[in-house]
Length: 221
Image 1: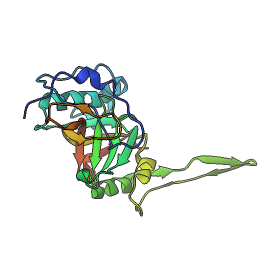
Image 2 (image 1 turned 60 degrees about the vertical axis):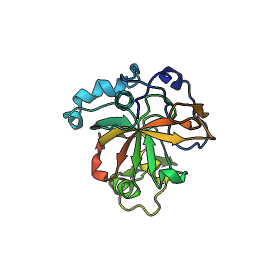
Image 3 (image 1 turned 45 degrees about the vertical axis):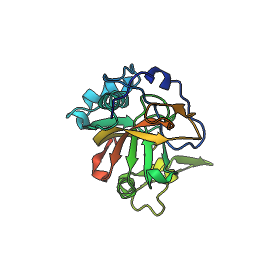
Image 4 (image 1 turned 180 degrees about the vertical axis):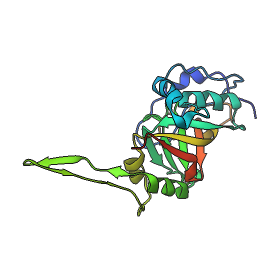
């Protein structure tokens, strides 16, 4: 299948609202060189050289996006991917199975967003490693500090996932690729593309996680 080109500058304008079929970032036309994304991950790029987790080299979400579009729909590129978790969700469409997702941006439709797609068992294992800490409360001069907890996950859902993972910085070992999302309704609005004469939808940039050991918590206090 041909690589992607042309309409990429347009994708930045796509906006997400409501519960669409999870992530997005583009539609096809044909390209053989990487996307130019700018310094959208400046904070991650500035710190990765100081992180022991990034000694092998870490790839930021905009760099991962460029890699995926340059490789094309049929290809994958391995690496260690660094991101801050800003959003997430759960599959609501049968073609995506029972996957859970975390995103490097709250607006998953923005070009440069990296999506980590978790298989349920992998996510459960990861959440068992993720501590949840309550905030201190002050009542009439008495200070009660809620402790941190980890352990089992009784109900695997997107709310539990975001409670434990939201705002965390992680490094993920895996392969980045383009994932086509069919979208006849929802947001971003479907856009005509060259993948098929009548198909509408968009691409997400994915790293799929089948094993919790693929994920490292960075600065996990």
